[in-house]
Image 1 (tube, rainbow, N blue to C red):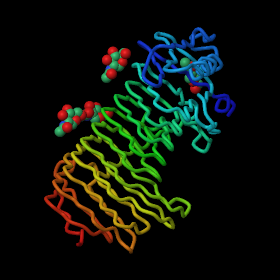
Image 2 (image 1 turned 180 degrees about the horizontal axis):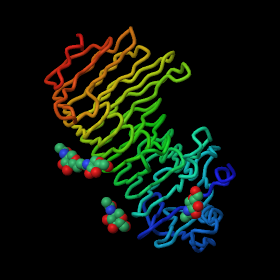
Image 3 (image 1 turned 90 degrees about the horizontal axis):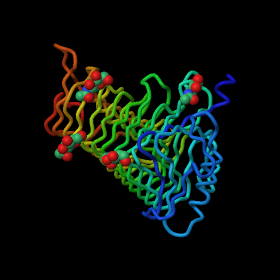
Image 4 (image 1 turned 120 degrees about the vertical axis):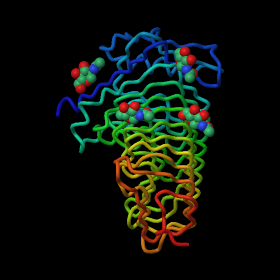
Length: 359
Ligand SMILES: *[C@@H]1O[C@H](CO)[C@@H](O)[C@H](O)[C@H]1NC(C)=O
Ligand SMILES: *[C@@H]1O[C@H](CO)[C@@H](O)[C@H](O)[C@H]1NC(C)=O
Ligand SMILES: *[C@@H]1O[C@H](CO)[C@@H](O)[C@H](O)[C@H]1NC(C)=O
Ligand SMILES: *[C@@H]1O[C@H](CO)[C@@H](O)[C@H](O)[C@H]1NC(C)=O
C-alpha cells in the first residue's frame, strides 16, 4: 500500500517539446530548465515547473512555458495557477483563458501500480477547470492512474491530434471526461483505454467529436446521468465519423434510477464498428423529456448478437431515429438482432431490422 500512497509520476516530454502558451505568441519564453528543473526523470521538478509557470503567468502580454525536448521530467503534483482545490488531479490547469498546449510531446502517468487498488482514490492525470478558449493538440497521454483528461466548466475548447492510451484492463481510465462544459471539440484522435474513450457528463452542451478512433475501451458515452437522484442534463452532442474497434460499447446513453433531467439532441453518425459488443445501447432508467437521439450511418460488426439495445423505463424514450444502419455479426453464421423496451421513434433502413421500436 505504501507504494500506492507515495505516488510519483513521470512527465516524459519527448521529441521535440511540449509547450504551454497563451494569448498566442512566443515573446516571453519561460524554460523550466532555467528555474531549476533537472529533467533527469528522477528528481522532483515540481517546484521548478511552478516557479516557471508563476513567472510566465505574471508576465505582461503573450508568454510561453517551455518544457524542452529530449528530457524526462518528474513532477509529483502540480496545480498550474488557479483557485481550484482539486488535489486528486496530477496536473491541474485552472482559470486560464486562451491557453494552447501542444508540441508533439508526451505525458506518462505511470499509473500501473495504482490500477491494482480499485477502491483507492486514484488521481486523474490532466485536468482543465474553468479554462475558456483552450487548445490542446498533438500530445500523447498514457497510463493514467485513473481518468486521463478531465474537462470541467470550460467553454470553447479544441482537442485534436491526441493519442491517449492505457491497457484495456486498467480500471476507470477514461480517455476524456467532460462535465459542465460547452462548445468542446475533439477531433483526429486515437483513444484506447480501460474505460470510456469519451464520457459526456452532466451540464454539457454543444460537444462535437469527429474522426476519433476508439478502442480498446467502453466507447463514447453520455452519462451516467442522474446518479444519486440528481437532476442532470446533456444536450446538443454530435459524434461523427468515428470508429469503435473491439470496444465494450459503441454509442451509449445511460441514465440512472431515481435521477431526473434529460439527454437530448444527441446524434451519432458515420460510425464504423469492428467487433463491438454493444454497438447501440440506451440504458434509461428515468424518463427524459424530448430526447431526440439519432443514429445514422452505422456500419460494421457486432461481437454480441444483440447489436441494438434500447432499454427504457416504463415512461419511455421518444424521438429515437435509426437510419442507414448495417451491423452484422462478427461470428460466421450468426445474425444480429435489436431489442427495445418502451422505446419510440422512427426507423429507416436498418440491419438488423428494428421492429420493436414503436411510433
Ligand atoms: C506535432 O508536433 C511535431 C513536433 O513539433 C510536428 O513535427 C508535427 O507536425 C505536429 N503534428 C501536428 C498534427 O500538428
Ligand atoms: C513507474 O512506476 C513504477 C512503480 O509503479 C516504478 O518502479 C518506476 O520506476 C516508475 N517509472 C519511472 C520512469 O519513474
Ligand atoms: C472520416 O475520417 C477519416 C479519417 O478518420 C477520413 O479519412 C475521411 O475522409 C472522413 N470522412 C468524411 C466523410 O469526413
Ligand atoms: C482493431 O484492433 C485490433 C486489436 O487491437 C488491431 O489488431 C486491429 O488492427 C484494429 N483494426 C483497425 C481497423 O484499426
